[in-house]
Length: 316
Image 1: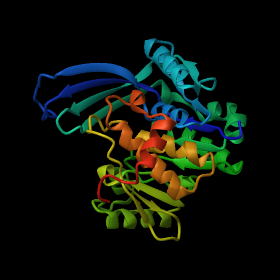
Image 2: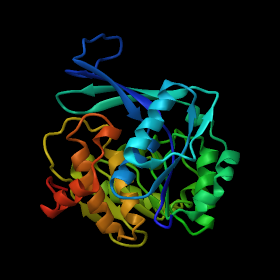
Image 3: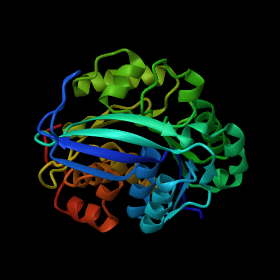
């Protein structure tokens, strides 16, 4: 239990549609493929952490329905401990994913359903598990008061906390909320949303990280898609981490979740922040070569094999 990654997050069923290009508003396109599978940032990151070698628990809420059963089957297959997952009256959520099959890019709409009914009291009921974890990882697909309660319980117990602020809120996160995370991992869009600054280059990413740190954040990693990531420890110079070319890009949907889950797994082993970011970048690089979200998460051996081939396959 001392090396546990506890993921406080969502599960939704991913309903994916592939097409030659994304449609415009009011336009109907014929797609080329349809699939349904497990998703939700919390669930994806839990699967990624488990496959990367961590003992992983997930704290979330499901409906008593087919999508809820899909969640539990997914976690059982990946080795994720689902004993903290609550079953409630609200149906399990779903996400509609539109995938541009030529570019591998996507647009996503999430209806969170059951997981968006998690309460601070339900987090308190799992307080012993939160306090005994090595790393607590959360996103923003749960109510903010529940996320805040989980992060606060963890921080007060000396547990390393990671916040992936996704999806980025419409209103700025309070400074006290940002300060609950030992590590903040936004992507370019989220960093821009949180700061009001443009984030198109590594220099702009560094400026956004500093702005977040001035508002209470500690260490920050800004993920930059095919350009890798920028690691910005508090009070230190930023370090670029390149992306990995593991094959043709098929689907970028789960890349950020692969990064966060894999990083949490090795931070639970007390790997340094920079080395953990390289490990996470390799995991993300593998994930984009496969369709889907949870099914695309690589296993530890695959990540280590890619790392052994050398660092980075695209310019930072």
